[in-house]
Image (tube, rainbow, N blue to C red; front, side):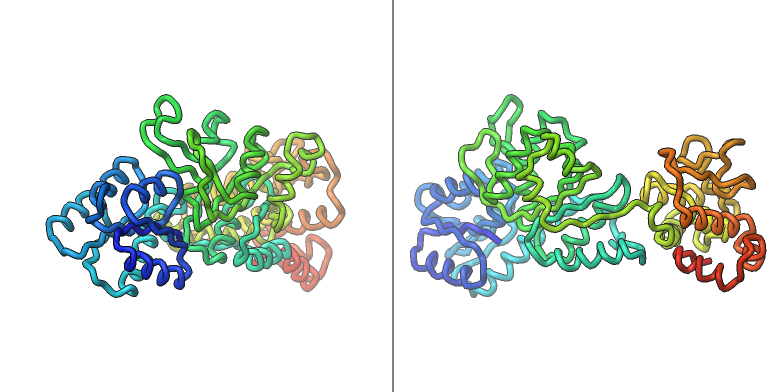
Length: 459
C-alpha cells in the first residue's frame, strides 16, 4: 500500500509517518497542500490523508482538485476543529472518511485499510469479468492438469512473471486467475486481450494518459498497469503485441515504473505480470518478430495447458462440471449425461477446447427433451463444427461406419489412439453396456474396465 499524508503540523506529520511505515505502508509526507498536489499529479497512490485546514492550498480545495482531475484514490480528511460543515462538504466532494484530531493511530490504520480494500473491490467489479458467484476451479485429474496446478501453487506466492501457453480456449485465463488468487496480493486482477485492442490505442490503454496529452484527452486516465498496482496484470495473447510496444512493456516490467502519454515522470507500480499466448514465441524470436529479451523476462515460470483432445478423461470431468453449473441456470436441474454422450465427449477432439465443450453442454441442455443428455443433443461432429464432421466417407465418432485413421492434418493416429477411439466408439454404440462392448471388441470385461480407467472414463 502506498499513501500520501498532507498536514502542516510537523510533529503530527512525523509521528504518522513513523507509525504507518512501521506498519509496512509506503508513506509520502507533505507539509502543505501545494506539495501534496505536485506529488499527486506525478505519482500513483492507493489513498490520501489530508488535513482540512492548511495554509495556501487547504484540504477541501485539494480534494476538489482531486475530484476534478478524475483521480480515483480514496481520501480521508482530518481536522482538529470537528466542524460539521467541513465534514459535510468533504463527503459531498467524495471523501470516504473523516477523522477528528486527536485520534488513535490504530483507528487511522483500520480506516485506511478499509478504504483501500473497498476501492480495490470496486476496481475488481469494473475490470474483472468473472460472473458473480462463479467458483474458480481448474477441473481435471490428468497428469498435465496436476502438473499445471502444482506450478500454480508454487508460482502463486512469488512475485515472478508467469507465461501460460496453450491453444485458444484451453483455460489460460482461469490458470492466470488461480495464480493471482494464490499470490495473496491485495490488488485487482486486471485482464487485457492484446490482440483485441487497435495498435494506436494500446499504449494509452496500458500506460494511461495525462489531461491534454492529445485531442480529446479531457481528463487524466489511469492505464491498466496502474489499475493493477498491488495486484496482477494479465496480458492475454502476448504474441499479438506489436513490436513497437514490446520494448515499452519490457521497460515497464524491468523498471517497475510507467509513464503516461503526455507525462514526463515515471510512476512506480507494484504490478505482477502474467502473460498467455497460443503462439510459438520461441519461433517468433527466431524470426525476429518477438523480442528475445522480453521473452526471457516473461518466461520465468512456464505453465502449459494441453488441448482437451490430449486429455479425454478431463473432458468428461469438465462436461459433468458444466452440466452441474449450467443446469440450474437454464432451468434443467437434474440433467445428467447418458453413456453415449460420455463416450462422445471422451472421443471427440474438441478443436475449440474447454470453451467449445462448455458451449456444447449448454446447447445440449437447451435441446434435450428429458433429463438424460444423449450424444445427439450435443450436435458434435456434424456440419462444419469440428474435424470429425460426419459424411458417408467420413463417419462421425459414434456412427456405424469405420473410424478415421488420420487426424485433421492428415497425420496417421498412433495405435494407442486408434485403440482408444475404437473402445470409446463401441461404448457409445452400445449405450455404455460394457459386457456387450467387451464381447464386440474381443476382450475381457476386466481389460475393458482397465482401459476405460486409463482414459479417465467414468459412466
